[in-house]
Image 1 (cartoon, helix red, strand yellow):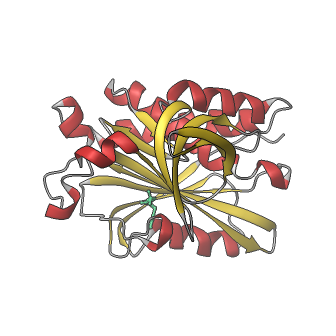
Image 2: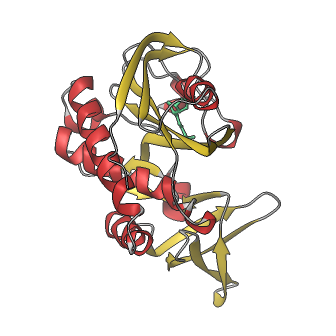
Length: 257
Ligand code: BTN
């Protein structure tokens, strides 16, 4: 496999680093191109949500990848990114985080970082743009985010150096992405994700899918990264459901929020 050589392009302001990266992927940019902006005017999250992207309050980052993976393994890219963010925050900020399925990075059940992976059809084949937002400080959070979001500064008591976080992130992403494409890479990333997530096993969660929601207990991941949830039905454990899309919330966090 050719060497993975990230290159970073920086901007003062962009609508969205994911949009910029997708345009460049369509124009033929090589994998490993990273886009970083000091602020985003139209930062996007999962499920059509907005990602608040105040100037210098967070790391707003996207990377173009052109994976050589079986289609069934593509969902593992977001889990790979979550493992990389977890490890980068440990290395750069000595911060221990949790991962909520599939790829929210939490501290004390509050969100500190989110990941948005978007596929793009390009003349060089299908690419994926992995966008990562990390809240570095919460000083300018809008009031509605305060109960549900946190930042590196709030969690560690120190404002982090963006460049130190960025360097650790690019390094850990590159390492995990290369490893994912090895022979046993998919199994390994599932193992590494489970080792870092309290949501992998035995967590009581509410799963919200497009048309229904249900409550159950997590029972690990499928080989493609889908979440296994054993449903509670009037106190009796019933079927094992495989969750591939939707939102997962800790039931205990629901009650205290
Ligand atoms: C989520 O948890 O909903 C995903 C949030 C992803 C936010 C990042 S910030 C950098 C990149 N550009 C975007 O517009 N979104 C992602």
